[in-house]
Picture (spheres, one colour):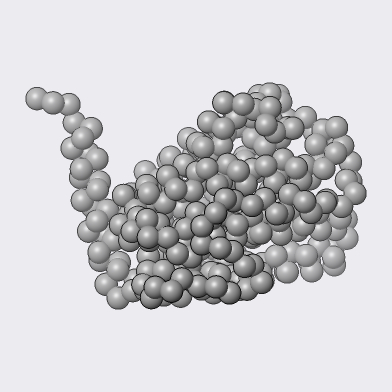
Length: 311
């Protein structure tokens, strides 16, 4: 695949490793986000999903606000612990989703269903992180993400991408299947699923900048210099992941009531997420943990000082 002519810095190695997951995905360094997965049709719908307007409100905002609140609590709980990176990323993306729907919920066929899916999605993260904190077993892709966050000299980009991989590739198919792969009118939810890629694309830069400001300045410099971790390439990759998510949700739905098939489906989802995690976990930078901890402590002090009333 084409690579930049300049030499990659160690901080960008994580993104280069991530690209190996989809070696057939050729992407130019600059240009508009291309919604290629939107043109891939769903399988025949299995039946209508429930209308979630009562739980989430017609525009899904009630559910999204609840998820934001839960994530803010986890963000505050972890503080400068490297495990705080993902709750911050996740909260900001949920916030962007809410703002997107507040501006014009009609861009989705079923915004209430989107809000309900957000709740089911969050519940899997909540279940995992509580199990992790209690010393219980968690999915392999999540274990790799938690190990990297707690030990070694990994960057904020590693923490972000490892957790996104685990939550999207491993968790999301189950959340989507639980919410329903179809709309209340019986049509496939895939067009709404694909439309959400635009929200991800819009949120990317601000999220990376915030992670750089709070947790790891190397994130800001890599984002500004472009390369494999730039907006275009990262979002095209996540769009490909999300296409796999929908297909796996279809497989889960089709396997309901068939225990052997469900076991095979679950194992394949776990394996893909685990393999991706091992590829992402490359490019450790000596001394990076100490640099990140010092940076976060300083950023936190500045934030506290800014919050104090003037004397």
